[in-house]
Length: 85
View 1 (cartoon, rainbow, N blue to C red):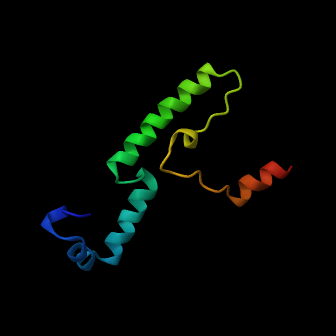
View 2: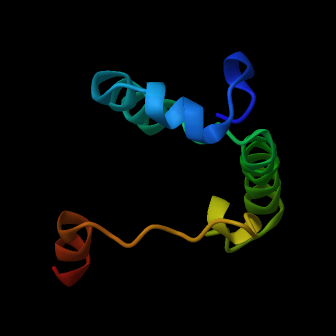
């Protein structure tokens, strides 16, 4: 947010309404981080994952194996229950 509209972070926080904040949360949930470096890392990790899985006989690499700045999210309750059966 820093630099958007020539405002400081503190000014932007004061001007941001709750509704607009909710819209940004929804956008980030759908589109991912606004950090350009993290977006580039994710794209590179996706390519690395596809390449590694195509060259490996066992496969099983996940995108998070190649993303050093992001941790794999914990499984949801439904995903955990699927592994129990």
